[in-house]
Length: 512
Image 1 (tube, rainbow, N blue to C red):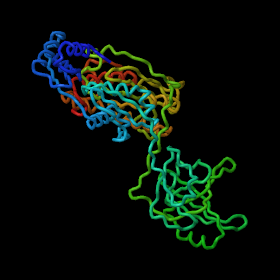
Image 2: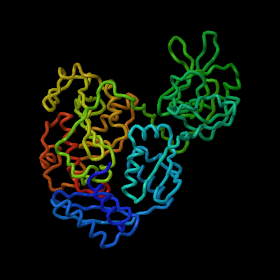
Image 3: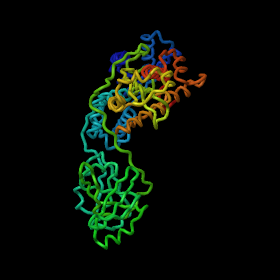
Image 4: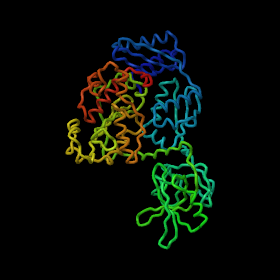
């Protein structure tokens, strides 16, 4: 998107060929000094005379600014550098997928005045690029950093997964293609009671409801010998793998197998092959074979994959918003850090029945979205906590049982909230409190928030060390921001405006 400066720079280079392919890289306005610093790039080294010509033109056009400074850098790239900067741009712009961007992601096809590149993306990442128009935003950002035209395309590739391996080809019937299922490869498997050896087990939490053949592993927490009505012996074995417990029954009349079972006791680590069978509406696990084994060193269960955000909002819909406080000095650059100019942030505030996530509940949620440095929309809802709201909380927030009795439950609103904050940086004043409540509420429903977070309490302490304290109302008062404290939407909007005010004049979040 071109702004007044872009048009001005195009005019300048059309009038003076010695300026080369002159482009605006960025401009930072320092409000307290009414000064402006402009960064420009070109494909050639611009002479001192050329720079003075640019600076004079800027001062003539922007005569209301006290002081204007200018830097013009020669900026060209080769294939290796182009690949590096494309990767860095993607990682900077999209924090949440940075771990998935590697050298294999970017293929630079050619570099002259035009850089042609191809991104190798999985379907999920491609969906994100399409949904957010990320490719066009990436190309615009690259073109502002380097004096080249960038042209990009996307190639869909299969997501790489480390499929569990087995020592027996006959075990290939296991359904391992479901990426939501978690597996652990056990070590030092000691063949005990089965004809085949296997070393990979499904997490118990994931496999309890899965019918058919299932391999489980874990520590034996209970082992009991019983007998059927006909007097046939069988064992009941309970195993715990740190995600859940499963109890299985092992039937055998083989004296040799019964003898081997003596090697297993409470505390033993075993891997079991068994069948999950449905009977009278309940699922039972019948053990067919088992071996002794060990967990991998320093094993910790992987976190269960999150449910995906819904494709569409269903109950609580975001609403567009405009703030009179927002500057329109430049369309793309308001003197904010580059991460804020090019990123998406969601400023969140919640109200709760108390401060303990173990038993207190959420009564109100609000989020205010900042896209490329502009406040664009908000999400807001009251929530029925399904518990009594104390007089102390009513006095503090004004939210009582009557106000929320007809409001939706957290299970009803959370999918829409999860969609609203998806692929954004989570911002809040004392962010740990809000994030912890929302993370725990979502985890119970299968939604795992993995957003990066920014704490405006931390920012205000770093940027405004002279304030008497850094409470939300104190910092907002410093910036003449008025709001209705202790109501989620008002607090979130005030925090969003405060967030932008705190960061004005800062080049990068890394510098704070």
